[in-house]
Image (cartoon, rainbow, N blue to C red; front, top):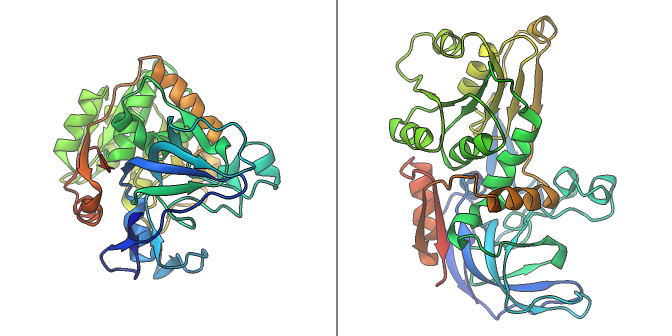
Length: 352
């Protein structure tokens, strides 16, 4: 097999050749056909997440060991299975749910493996999909996506299920209220598309890139805002939503987006952050009780969430975001382009 692995933090991915893996126990061998490139892979490749005020959450503290093959949005053909995997559909192309829990804790038993404190995600603590082959620990993490464009469906394993889970926490929004999506990258555009399919009546997209905001409008955003040149973006966002901003899903997760989102919310508003850009959350503590705000994080999604999302996509009500394909050997170059803001929508690597 061939993979493009992280061998040193902050350095380019390196091509590695090794024997094809052999599945054991309940494991399933997947021949990778598609793998999405996610913004979190940039942070992982740098070796840390920015916790603000000079603090860093390091991937080595998370248990990551190098070399590691990144890539957690994987679609592939089932090529083999271990003796305990049961009746696995060899030859079938399926989407891989990458958020693997320990399997025994309360969260995992309740099928909320994304809330497991001992997660071993594919592409983070298990070798991922920037490769020709991948081992999945159990067939329960394989999702049937028959009838859906394979390139379009691949990013739903992360960007899709992440914002779907967050929108479930942020919604509902009443007919005279607004939902705001901070950021119009892969996550943000997917959130705009899904929010419309999930019944959000008024959607406003915020980004500093006008090309991305145009894509958001094409996906169903009713209003867009570029706060880059505004002296008081909070006043402008409040004006645009008539003081009825009820929910914010922050797909950036930065200091500026958090302030804009939280300070623009109406009383009893909900701020849900999924982005990992980094920094420190700063706000007056009395504002929380005075405005009865809800501030919460949402981390990726469960396998159940992913199956629900695929059902929603099959309904035909979800507009696909722009997705470009590139060959697998462009994994590192694609990460650099994503880091430099050169990608609108998503790039999916392909081995075909």
